[in-house]
Length: 322
Image 1 (cartoon, rainbow, N blue to C red):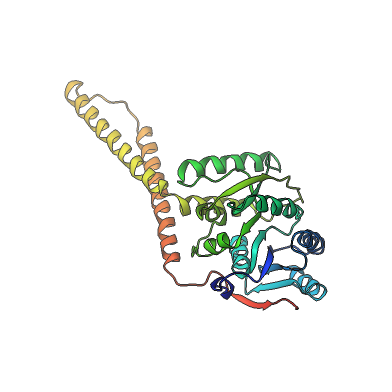
Image 2 (cartoon, rainbow, N blue to C red):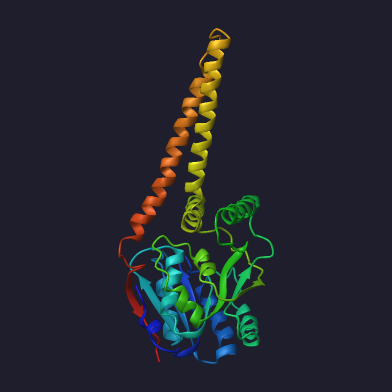
């Protein structure tokens, strides 16, 4: 889906704050209060807070609509089903009308108050389009830290785009950057990759991210995100299959030459037992299935991208109460 606001010349307000909602009910009221206070410091009353309901199973939508009655600057976008965190955020960005757009999660892990500091920083650097948050060190337990370190190491080794390590959602962007970002049509979306791929001048800012407890990203979702990130921004797995197959072919040819020489010069003597043969069959079988699976992932992405489906489907938009 597209928002007509991006087709207009210019913007109608100073600031848009965009956040998606999923299991956000415990944090919404405090998030709204802190965002409103920060927004007033930089934009007066000329701002909007866009909350995108990604079919949250709790009372997030009801609370957001109640807050909208108290604050006419709130816009609530209700999606028809759960489309995922990244697509929900992109939908909010498509509706943003501000000269600057502040993207942030509403779970209060990221302090909304950084908006004020970043606003002044953009004022002082007119050629700067994006300020994004990075963690000095990754939060969480040993698994989260190690898996996060491996994620960035692997994806940066395979991809042509270098992703900054330990980035967070919070970022302040200019309208021209957001317009360029929302031109992307990826159905299989990895938003953090698109944020870098869009270009423009971007700078990092350190942010201490607070730990609210359990994460909505399960192990399965983390693995899915990892696979999606690699296959969206790198063809290296396909080339790896080719080179691995070529290496195995060369090894097989050398083995055949060795067996022929062994037959002629050593009267066909060989080691008894077929353990090595069985292991080889299982290894090659696993390699073939894995290779076909990798190719299948890329084919599935091609299949998804060729369909002219909307990014998300909006059930209803509850606009500003001017």
